[in-house]
Length: 77
Image (cartoon, rainbow, N blue to C red):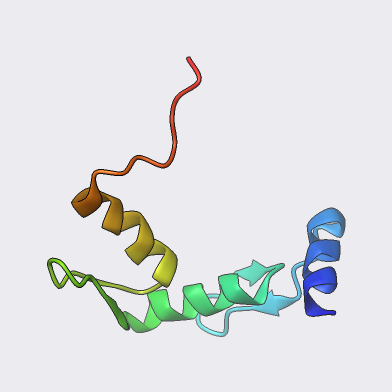
């Protein structure tokens, strides 16, 4: 499966996916997609609360915490 192949690349440090714009290589295809969006400056994901736009859904989800006040991570110290 593609998930197993991607996981295998983590252990072997293989980076099979290469960005055509800058040459940076990635082990996981989704990382390459994010990189391509970064180059294109395309921001297809928008915040329903404030309208701010993001290149990836994960960036939008991280931003959403600003509006909800939810802090998903805590310091162990």
